[in-house]
Image (cartoon, rainbow, N blue to C red; front, side, top):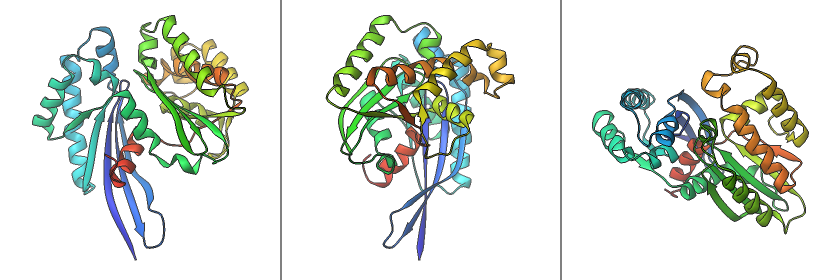
Amino acid sequence: MINIKKYAAIDIGSNAMRLLVCNIVEQEGKAPQFNKSSLVRVPIRLGQDAFTVGEISDDNIERMVDAMKAYKLLMKVHKVERYMACATSAMREAFNGNEVADLIQQEAEIKIDIIDGKKEAAIIASTDLHTFIKPDQTYLFVDVGGGSTEFSLFDNGKIIASKSFKNGTVRLLNNMVNDLVWVEIEKWIKTVTEPFDNVTLIGSGGNINKLFKLSGKKQDLPLSYFYINSQYQFLNTLTYEQRISELGLNPDRADVIIYATRIYLNAMKWSGARNIYVPKIGLSDGIVKAMYYGKI
């Protein structure tokens, strides 16, 4: 006898918004299965507004409201019984972020939680990371977003340290990350990983998923430092248009993927990691699992 629950998560990021609809299959004596039913991504780059002028523009507010109305209808036809919408650094930093959240609640009847970097890292870490993490190894989990990057160090299956930095792809695209932030990240990574001999990276985010897809590797195999470095050099030789036409990247991915690759590459270099695993997980997956297990 199986029981199926339908949960949904809305991730309002700095580069795009996502709706994940998930089937949770419950069977007696077995761990629940989380199966993706639908994923709808809308490229509304809120970070472009929030990080450059400090507020979300009228045009993007209108697009957000329309997207949220569409998400509401999609959840209705999927018969979603429970959902949660989380907004990250762009909504956090826009001075009209709360005002926009209130408007969306009125217009689309969707309540938005604007979460801080620490909670974002904790939600992502509540995904099925234990299925990728071997208890006797050390991992640095790196989630690169448009506005911030979350780092978590795991050893013996437990989080040792976690930190969020205001260094993300949309900020880098707009030349808004000074050298001091890079120095802080380098210092933090080297300090927390120094006691451990072998560190492996786990990468999360749309850009590393795209890099992994381009590699053609099987899901359970890692990418090497050499591969990430060679891809970084290769991407830099292509124009924005070539990255769209030759690699098949979305326009809102083609301009930020180089910046994301730089963050992963530096994290590998500073931690001494030779490999990076890329499980298909993100904030929306974490939201569904955190809701199911009563963590949020």
